[in-house]
Amino acid sequence: MIYSLSGKLILKEPNSIVVECGGVGFRCAASVFTVQQLPQIGEQVQVFTHLAVREDAMELFAFGDQEELVCFKRLISVSGVGPKVALAILSDIPPAKFNLYVVSGDVKAITKAQGVGPKLAQRIVLELKDKVDLNESSAIDLPSGIAAPGGTAQGEAISALVSLGYTQAEAATAVARLDPTLSVEDLIRGALKQMM
Image 1: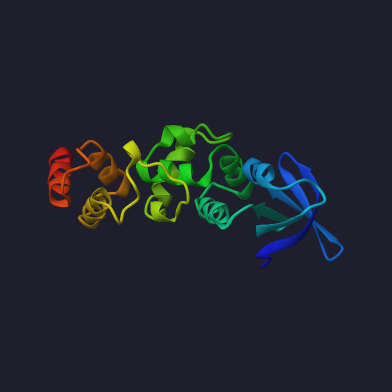
Image 2: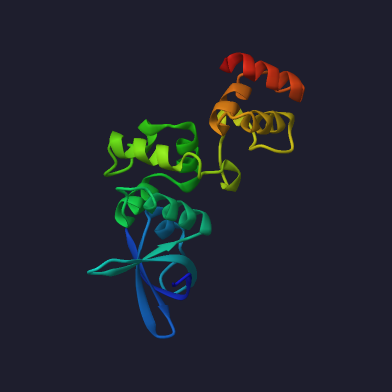
């Protein structure tokens, strides 16, 4: 409904901001990362938003970039994860790292977020594993410095393994253990041997 807000930042608190647009101040809940990356009070800002409508309330959530907004929307699609829990997760884990944790099935890392227990973390990984694409993350660190698929021999090997049915995390981890100077074919063969 409200896609973004552009205006003057008039309030900045640890978990919320107020952006004045056309004389109206919009209070938005925001992650710690969004609040930290915004300029000083009185300066112009643009934030991407999500309007959560419940029976008893309407709440606006603000994000510094579209990647964080997409991650938030995925999180609230998981049963048992409401907007406040999703915001708490994104306050503790940046979107790029969160995507890597989901793809690699790192439940323990997700439980470090405030209010997330092992069962909820497992549900998040289970429901989002197929929806997350590491290529969309702006600053992702795959194991041993492997680039996201595409362009390099390692990237092509990972793409080939994914097309064979392995997850991106499994493929990246297996390829990371091999000599990076190998050809695409040798990387694929070596990774398949490891995974069998």
